[in-house]
Length: 75
Image (tube, rainbow, N blue to C red; front, side):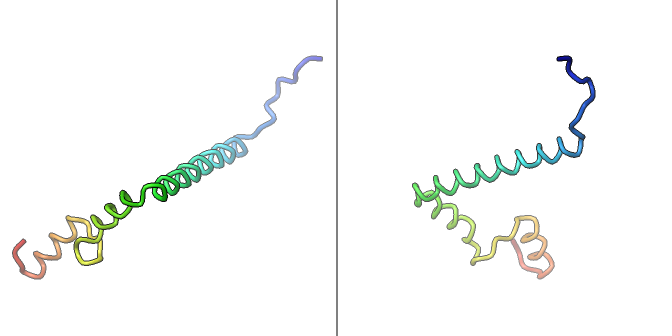
């Protein structure tokens, strides 16, 4: 039986399948990260402490400097 040379899968379907595979990989990576964090809670606690050293709000450095200049305080 000879194969039919016509392509039967559309680019839209191929794109959907690719995106689905990527989402599944991302989801699995997040799941693995949660498992690692649960297995080693001290590493997670250190990461949280680093994020909240400035009073509970995480403000990017550039924005914090800009706000301090606007208020007239010295950095």
